[in-house]
Image 1 (tube, rainbow, N blue to C red):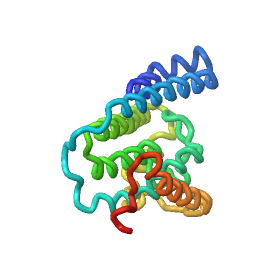
Image 2 (tube, rainbow, N blue to C red):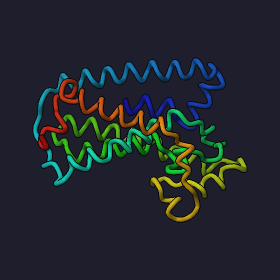
Image 3 (tube, rainbow, N blue to C red):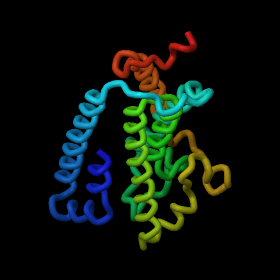
Length: 213
């Protein structure tokens, strides 16, 4: 699963495929390969069965996960629903990109971190470490591409945004306009969060709210 994301999105592979097969075919190929890899990953996870604990859950980890996941979902939803341009020619930062330069990748990384703080079974650790590796690889690739780009929009974009959420805003290099994020993205994030909490015991087998009932 890691290879399907890193290889197909590689700095040389992705442009070559786009130029030879076109954007629609590339995205179809990427989606198909990713779905197959994810299905194989889930099958291997189920076949592995329950294992041993590698470490005790960190104190306060459950509360941290419950508190962070709405923000994680907002980052990911913002990434999916906001146009940003190409990595080597980004649009001026707007909406969620004023908060974080790579909201999708950083959201996935936060998601894996808060879960690794809670789950210690060996197969869970392998699964979340693999997803964290995908997120970190995407962050590094995008940073390398943008820093190496020759377009005039990149220097200003890098100055006005930050990898860490809110860092550019705190340093006075960016301003937050909630109107650009809108009301429906936070509502969608909260609704998705509530749905995940509801389905978590049935799909994942663990109830995140159980200790607090």
